[in-house]
Image (cartoon, rainbow, N blue to C red; front, side, top):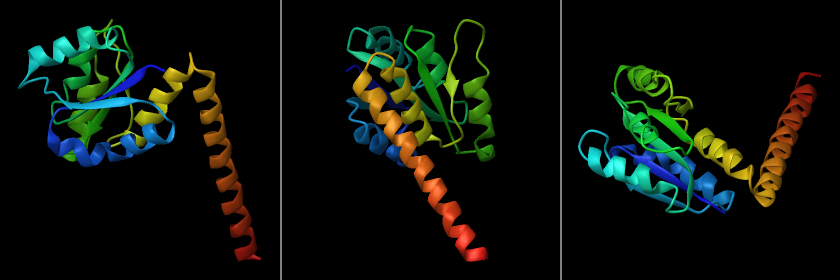
Length: 162
């Protein structure tokens, strides 16, 4: 199975990414996490992105706050799918959200909600599952489990309101 890369612009983003680490582990997806800044280490960011595919990665998750250029900077240097996580740090994260989604033509970045690391990991799993039936089956089971939990909650509600 190809690996997922989880890149954060700063160690202050680490608490936001914990749900992604947990979810990737639950799905059995190998991953690496690194601190690489689009602004403080731009050459390192470009080098990582250029070499990511040959290093066995199939998807990149990039989390950054404020200007949030990390996902776009990585996407500019790779053909791999890049998922951006805007991190709430200032302006309630709206600055990071807009910086993540407002990419120029030809440099797409998929974006999840502000601090949406869990969904980023699930989307990464869906991308990797295109070439991995085992992972695809795990995702199907995950969706079934979510549905069963929602149905159970409705059942409990119905009992409560009787």
